Image (cartoon, rainbow, N blue to C red):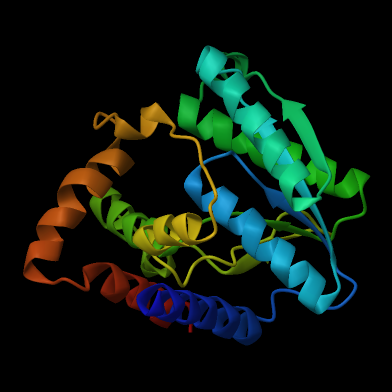
Length: 241
């Protein structure tokens, strides 16, 4: 029990310190959290539900169905609906046609999905007067992004990785409250709070470069430096100034 308590205190301290330093949320904000049903987004929804009560801001959830993965995607949407009910939060759903966008605009599937997802989130946020959209990117995502930029070739700005906040539209800001914690800490957070998350099996496909970095490159680097994820995230933070 003591170890669980210590873990909870450490993770909450990281999240709260980061949130205060970045000034992500204020009293009276209207926030839309993007929830796919995966571990990071479930953690995000739960954390923000606590923060919303503590800081007195409005929180809603949004789920974007990409028109991919068949029944698995339908189950993701149902899991998000149940999560919203458990947390007492309203959930908004949007369905987009990623294959059509990819074919029509000559984009890759991942790029098309990202484009349509953020467009849908911006539309939902604007329709419900939300000034902020929160996503569940965490520290491992940051480390992977820095490595991907290095692999693909980048200017120095690319080493800044994922910002804690950036404009999504002229009136809506995109924020990432989970950036200070690792994927492992997210997993332990879910266990601690009895939260279940969906597994996107496409994340196991190592033909995708990010998955290869996640499952092959980072574990090899970690053998030489157990804190490689924190080091890469630190580089990103330094580059952002």
